[in-house]
Image 1 (cartoon, helix red, strand yellow):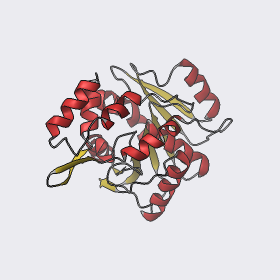
Image 2 (cartoon, rainbow, N blue to C red):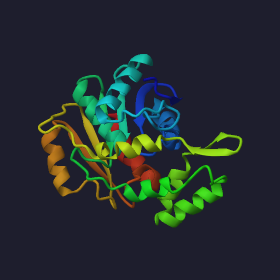
Image 3 (spheres, rainbow, N blue to C red):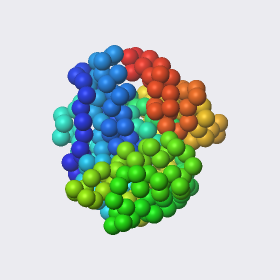
Length: 256
């Protein structure tokens, strides 16, 4: 599958993968800073069924890892650093297992290798409540989301995917039906006993519960070369909630 991407900067390759309901452009501001400050070519990739990449009913970590492998080959990218947030972090980990030695380093943002039970039902319900045969303006869609969801950050994050399909019809950049059908696979764990030797940095938000003390122990057992950094005053969207703290956490690892 040919994934859509946007490239920012020139230099060593840094491939960035977004989380569920996201798109590569979510990382554009930080990518520009990393490109300018330390000389990276940042590839902002839309994963399958998201953004401008092809939508497909097949949606799981195994096939997304293979999409990433195909992308690296198509773009002639060698020895990359792979950075993934949440679902994108799981893709990075599955890729490192399937293609050991291809990536120079891994950065996994606010996700652990363990299983996560489905917890996106409220978001899915809010998205399905928007009928684009009836809803004709961004303001109407925003009102429905805000009425169903209580976190303003989540509402604004989802609205970044709203676009004009035609002159008078709105739609989502992501494939809502494919995501809904495969939502249980999003929390899938890495295979038991799987070990990764690639130097890896896990970055967690101080206010996020995605990486807890038990997860830290599991991470240190699975990875032979690993660091764990905590970004203060940040929840699950670490890079958006505290970009300064996020940069402070990742820059030493990137420059090493």
